[in-house]
Structures are given as C-alpha cells and as structure tokens.
Length: 267
Image (cartoon, rainbow, N blue to C red; front, side, top):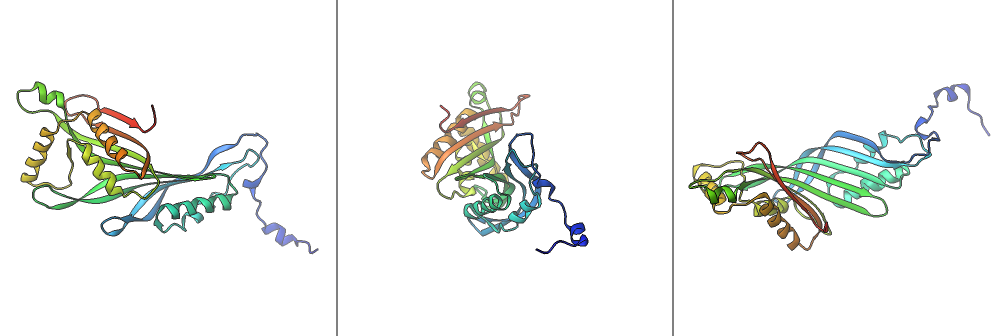
C-alpha cells in the first residue's frame, strides 16, 4: 500500500464537523437560514412568475456527530428550478442523502403577485401576497402552504348602533393548508376575499371606491364572521385536508387589533 508523502498529509484538510461528540444530545434542526434566493413559481395566469425568497434549510443531527456540512445545503438548493411539490421533495431527498440525515427541512418565504381587476372601472393592478412554503421529509413528505391576503372588514356593531356610517379597516386573512392536490395561491386569495366585508385592491378610481365602500357597508363582518366564512370555503374544497385560518383587523378606532383563529380538527 502506498503511503501519503509529507506534502499530501499537509494538504489534507481535517473534517472537523464529522468528529464524534460525547454530549449525547441529538439536535432537531441544524442548517442555514435567511438565505436570499431567486425562484421561479407556477403562475395560474401567466405560466411562470419570478420572485426572490428567504430560505431556511436544515437536517436533524445524531447525538454522536459534532456538526453538519453547511455548504451542502446550498449545493442541494441549486438543483431547484421551478418550484413544485415534487421538485421541493427532491431537494429534501438530496439533503438527507448528502448529509446522511433521517429528516430534512426546507422553508421558502416570498412575495407573490396577483392581478386584480377593479370592480367598476375594470382597471387591473398588482396585489402582493406574503407566502410561505414549509416542507419536511422523514419517512413521508409534508408540505404546508401559507398565504397572507389583505382584505377589508366593517364592524356590524358599529353599523347597528350608529345613526350613519360604521368603522371599517384593512385586515389580513392568513391561511395555512395541507392538500392532497396542487392548490393555486390565487385560489387561496379568492377564498380570503370571499370571507371579507370587501376585497382590497391595488388601484381604484372614484366609481370603484364608491362600490367597494358600499359593498363593505352592506356586508358587515366581525373578524369572527370573516374567519368562519373562510373556514366554510376551505372545508368545501376536497383537495384541502387540513387548514389553519386567522383574520386580524387593524382596528381604525381602537388602540388594538382584533383577531380570530380556527384550525381544522382542533376540537
């Protein structure tokens, strides 16, 4: 057997991460976070949409290993082209194999833009949604899709007790789902609008503003009402197997926000 010469020994770098650890504590997540990364998403209207995500990747670490190899997370992520459940699952499989882990974790947080048409003028404008994909792979693959959609609420109590007018405000509907088939982000945005007193738009002319204001006045909803309406719409979709929904209202006349939350199967 040939022996390494002194120069080869000098150039060989020690693998410190693979050293044995005697503290006997396994770690649930070890990895990288707050990585900015360009993504290509499926867009229902245009086919594709480019965005930039904030990415977290992690694996579990056995009790007997000191560390993991951080560079391999980026190497595995580089294989992700168009974001799709099967492509994201492949990234997790690559992480498990490359880092000899039992479980792998991936989270993508990104803005996604949809086009909305004003109700009277018909003018279109962009609306940004804050979205999060959270994935994990052990023995099985799990994917949770979360989206935050701006909506409008108008207080039923304020309308009832006032001689004229009622306080209304912008709110946010947050939905997190698990599904057995692909669900468009646009579909979740439509569900949020369906639970609101009225939708929110990026561009409104005066006739549009009149329409939206009166629509909200004719459809007053507490946050409790809005989140229940959203839950009913989520329940109707056979693709959605689990959901958690919350509506938070940025109260216009109170020094606090109001919110209500529901989760499928919690009770």
